[in-house]
Image (tube, rainbow, N blue to C red; front, side):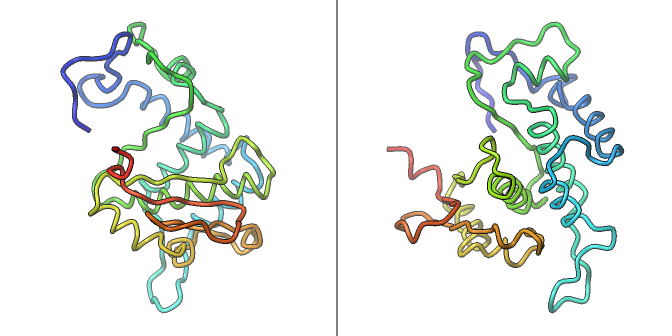
Length: 221
């Protein structure tokens, strides 16, 4: 993300603490580690089932492969952090995030803070797409299986350019990643009714949920 030279009024530089990391990150990491050590207190039965299914000690035995499939530790850390902030701490505003996880008196709040925004910072090639698939499944299955209206059934995935769009298309077209990766536990497959729509596709038969994939340039006009 490119930095601009001027900051919006009332918006502090939240990316600089010792020039290295966002100010909330250290305490969030401590809180997530403690929560994980405490057996994931405060989550729904559906979320608990998902975490258990995604991260078994011995990995997943995949058809046609002699090696066990495992999500990488940083992929696990990313989705666990998102679950903790949203479901356990119920953080929906930047103000709440900073009041809970920052111990600095000089932090300024965003000028506009009307809806939840989260950023998972991951390196290029570290498997962000797999984390996206886990986040979608977590939200959708809690919305449907738990009947929670504070979870989402509909998703918009925006690629920054056509090259990334084509890569995402290979993973998400026809819901491929949800079938080839161990995303959906067998116990929850009866709830899985999510259609994937690629850029330019028309609506199909109604489903309980939908994922729309396009590139940001389609919205420029």
